[in-house]
Amino acid sequence: MYENKKILITGAASGIGKLLATQFAKYQCQLILVDYNSEALEATKDELSNASISQAAIDCFVCDLNQEDLLMQTIEKIKDQFQYIDILVNNAGIVSGKPLVNLSNDDIKRTFMVNTIAPFILCREFVKEMIERDQGQIINLCSASSYVGVPKLSDYAASKAAILSMDESIRLELKQMKSHVVTTAFCPYYINTGMFDGVKTRFSFLLPILKPEYVCQRLMKAIAKKEKRVIIPPFVYLSFVIKVFPPVIFDALLSFFGINSSMDEFKGRKKS
Figure 1 (cartoon, helix red, strand yellow):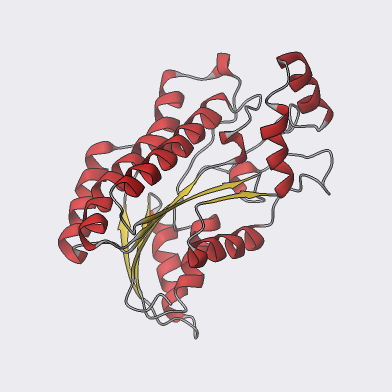
Figure 2 (figure 1 turned 45 degrees about the horizontal axis):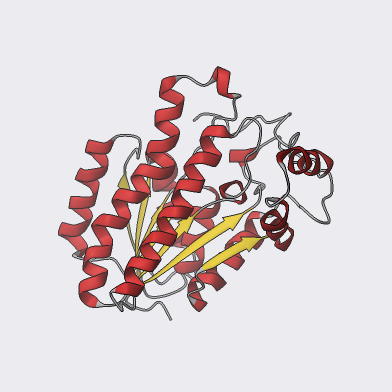
């Protein structure tokens, strides 16, 4: 299925990005892994290269998506080496987990640079060749918070809402061109990775903290089937309904389902 495909994954040294790389490595494809953590990235490459099931060629690029100049340099290096990309997975993301009043200008800028602007730039730079070749796929990791704001996630939710809108707009632009290039907006609830360490849920049977392995499996299915949008768990679809209620009712429902307090004990990923 992915034989001879060139697959670029950002945030590939940990979490969902690493799990995706592990799945793709089972195929005879070209993996292009991007992450800011050089040690973790090299360890991931070694782990995948030494795995008995691995058939992929693996190249790594160290890049902090918060640095625009470095991002552009990395893109040029990838283009020079590989010419084009078949599958782009905009997976990298960060979360500050702070109330608005505690966010510094740098916090806000970094969140939007990594979560929004970098994916914009990556999409723009690699979709050109996809359109020329009339094939390719872009996967944008959005979030359930693309639809519903959450206390202590104002910057994160806004950055992910922007990515969802970008994905929708690109999808419609491609449709106007009658292009066969596909975009997939993947919108999960909280995932049990270090990034959201400490988050909690009130009704786990409705809004479970998602296991990374399940998320990866569902994401691989979405890529294989070229689904345009995936929202998990399905209960998140209720947000479309409750959005029509007046804010006082909407806010009360979020409190009842424990969404407003979900970040109260947030710790986040330890800095490496």
